[in-house]
Image (cartoon, rainbow, N blue to C red):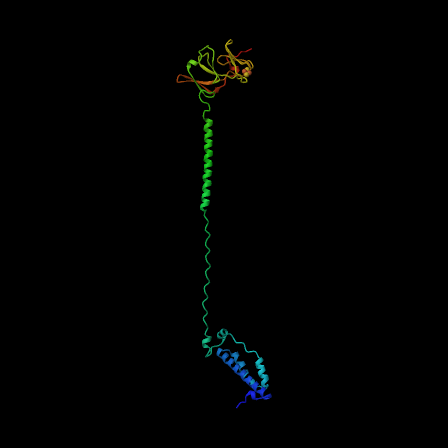
Length: 281
Ligand code: FES
């Protein structure tokens, strides 16, 4: 019967402790070897054998135990690697069976980027554009209207009847007969006369020289300009003086038994050289 360690002393006690440690180490090594064999790792058997032969070696039990104790335990192979690399054995057949790898998940399709949609004009922009269009159209229309009104006013007769520049409506009795002195119509700035041919004529009251107002000289039966002495016959022909032409006159027509003098239409007198009344010195 084995003695209790507590009853031993000295060298016997140490020897007993060493033996127990060796046994414990051997048991641990066996367990690891069995575990490794079960896992199919041949390399794991070597430490087991070494562990089995370890007590038989000549080393003192204490040193062997210390050596075993100090010897690092064989690293446990990873289960997954052992199963994949170890040959098939009885116990490890199922473990060596290749584990089907899970099918890789398909990479998620990248989200298709939405095509940029051309941003249309907002309601506010549309309103602004419409406003600008209407404003431009209104300005253009207003400008056209102003141009039309200006053209109409320019072409419209600016003188009313009875005012200088407009038409004068006279009765035939207002026109002096042949050989009678001329009649002044001051509002229209003309003299009414009857020519030697018996035609009514409206002479412009302004001298053709420098614009003075000539006068009727009944004593001489002619017109005379007080400024430079130009003289004209009763029907406006140039006689003498610095005036370059005979007296100007207005357009005169007979409408509806009325004598119409248009002071807006002035007709220049004939050149002085062509006057039949011109005095040749
Ligand atoms: Fe009448 Fe000179 S303005 S002659």
